[in-house]
Length: 214
Length: 348
Image (cartoon, rainbow over all chains, first blue to last red; front, side, top):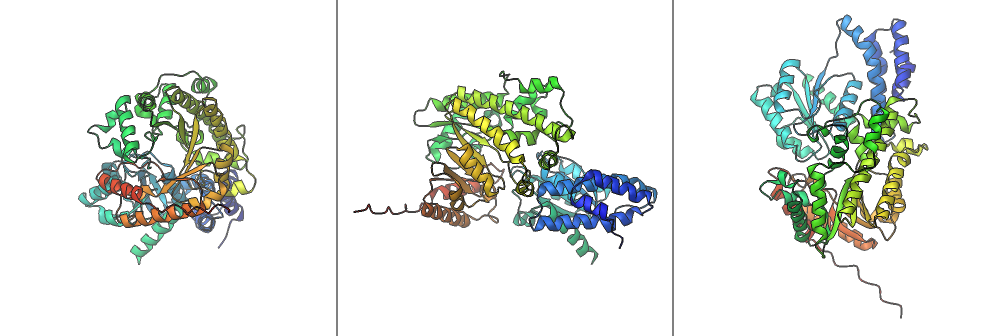
């Protein structure tokens, strides 16, 4: 495994400028984009996640690392496209209808991107119909929904019901999160999983898809 | 007492219109106080109002205000308009809030309390990505080095001005205390790692603006009730309690109030903090668990001897189809009593 130490450290320390520079240098040196992602960037984000779990890092560090990762990815994406390569897992994410609180959703999106998933961010106040349309058109493996308010939580169930009605429910895993959401609520409404934080959401996506592949 | 006006509001046939009707809103707030037998008339926790009034100054409609975020540094003229000390026109919700205060102030047995979002929490609602900007400032980036950091401090200026205008108006309309809600002052926005390594970001973004706000309240002979239901570290609690010195400190459900008592001066009443955000679900929070937790909290507070008002961790929001479930649990919580700590016999 060829770890690019400069890029790894830049992401780990949330230094977007250094991550950008290290990526440019690696590209100029002829390193394969996918190798950079898999051997340096994803391991860096894994380490960020581990530090978050043991409370060495907090949400601000997660976001800074995610931002550094995203900046590096912007350089690599055109190269991946040109080479006919694409990210293996696609995730659609949004806050549910009526909910404009997107900070948690943005953190999860950033961490998922940082972990090498393709993220389609539908934004805030996403109606069940728009989630359904995104699943139909973009064919994601996972749908993530967020609600910060108890008053908007019922929209999660409405969205799951809409996926069911459209015959799409079995095609995607549905994960939910947000301050008032619980495991119990996820079970009650028929979601596939719940995570109380962004790092947990990344692990959950990996576990669910690994389970599916097994 | 719970912060329960929203639950009571939704007993009414047309709750959304009542938000903009000062007299009716006043009656809802009065009813809420009387239902739970408290003189403290806590209003609706509608933390959108200051943002709506602020953005109206630059022509953003109330309908669009919630989703509106600044993404690039503001020009001088826009910033000056946002920060102008002169009171501008208020949205119907703010006008109703002020009229409701006048209504409550006319009831001699009730204490009229106002409500406003804290300056830092308002900043986080004005920016699309406040955490990253805060984190960059926290690691030492200056406004001159980064547009994100520059915008952050511009938003802080605008937010302070908006909150000052709101608080002055509420004092003018009879508020004897104001609950300042700073839920964003928490470890998701302010990294304990940065604070530990000596960053002054908590000081600059949270403490200094709130100390200036406290001075405005003091000037108006109005008490501070400080509310922060976010995840906190002990130095944050200590700073709020000792330096802002509110009459009441309201904390979120993740704090153990009897342990926090050691961080708080004895003349600051602790308020809270049952996890009311989970009350909608019988699975997550059955009524027996509500009663058990309430008994536990009261016994521990009784044992530590710190002044305490039993209440909710935050606003107890109405949830469609779960209102009765929530109300039943709030009533059960408020019905729990624990015998007062036996008084020590006087020295003979």
